Length: 367
Ligand SMILES: Nc1nc2c(c(=O)[nH]1)N[C@H]1C(S)=C(S)[C@@H](COP(=O)(O)O)O[C@H]1N2
Ligand SMILES: [Mo]
Image 1 (cartoon, rainbow, N blue to C red):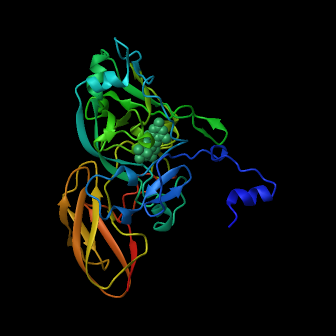
Image 2 (cartoon, rainbow, N blue to C red; image 1 turned 30 degrees about the horizontal axis):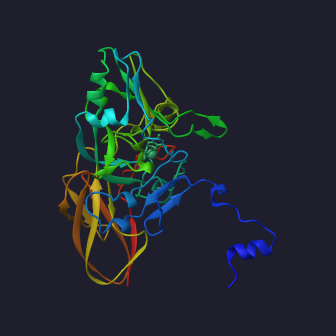
Image 3 (cartoon, rainbow, N blue to C red; image 1 turned 90 degrees about the vertical axis):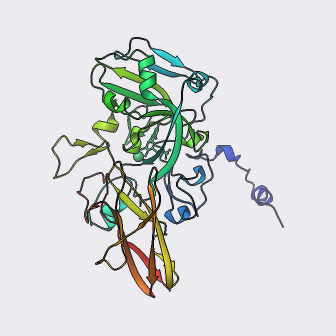
C-alpha cells in the first residue's frame, strides 16, 4: 500500500510539517465522545460524566479560550501585584507562591454563557455568542493561596476598591478591534472573601489549558472572573474597567437599563447525565445528573411527564450535587425535566444569552 507521503510525493506535493498547520487552541486531547467543539472552545458532553465522581476529571473538563492556550515557562513566570491600592508591590515566582500557606476548595467553574443555546431552541429568542448546551461547566478541587493573603502581603490599603487580574494569553482581537489581554476587575470585597490563586487542580499541577502555572478561582461567579494564566493583579484605589465588564458579561435588553447590568454571580442549573436526544432502553432506569448554584441546592426535583415532580435523591454534595431518581421508561419519545430550588420555566432574555437558568426540556427516546 502506498503511504500518504508517497501519494503526496507522487502528486508533486510536499508534506506540510504538522507544525505549519494552524496551531490548535487547546493542548489536551479532545475525543468526540467527551467534547462538543465550538471554535476555540470545548464543551463537556453530559453523558461522559455519568461514570465520574464529584470532581470532573481534567480529561473531560470544558475549556473556554478566547484565543489559544499559551505555553508559559514556569521558571521565569512571575505574578506581579501592584497599583495604587497596595503599599508593598510584590513579584512572586511559582516557588514563592508554593511556599506560602495554601488552602483548597471544591468549586464549579462555569461559563456565563452556559445553556445559551436554549434561549434560541427553547425560548425562540436570538442571542449572540457560543451556542453552549449545558456542558460549559466543571467541578474541581483547586489548591492555591488565598487572594486575601496575597493582598495583605502586598500591603493592601483601606482605599483599595478593585483588583484587576490580567491573563498572559494573547491579546483578544474581535471584529478588527484589539481588546487587549483577557482581564476583568473584581471588587476587593469578593477578592478578600473566598478567591484563590490556584496552582493545582484535582491534586495535580494546574494543566496548561486550565491556566498553568496559576489562575484565579472565584467561587460562585461567572467563569470569566476566574482568569487563567495569571500574570498580574493590579490593585486600585479607583474603580477599574475592562471590555469583559463593559461590553461583554453585561445583561442588555428590554428588561435592563440602557447601560446594562454587570454579570457577577451564577444562577442555579441542573442537567441529566444523558446525551441530547439519547436512546434509553425500556424498563426500570436510574436517571442521574447534577445540580449546582452559588448558594448550594437543597431540593432537586425531576419530571418525566411534564406535570408531576418527584424529589431526586442526593448522591453526593460538594461543588455541585449529584442526584438520582428511578424511572420506569416506556417506549416512545419523552421529555425529561429537572429543577433545583425554584429554577424557573423561562429565563429573562438578554441579547448575549447569559445566565440561562430555566428548566431544560431534555428529549430522549425509549426503545
Ligand atoms: N486568561 C484567560 N482567562 C480566562 C479565559 C481566557 O480566555 N483567557 N476564559 C474565561 C472564561 S470565559 C471561562 S468560562 C473560564 C473557563 O475556564 P476553563 O477553560 O478552565 O474551563 O476561564 C476564564 N478565564
Ligand atoms: Mo466564559
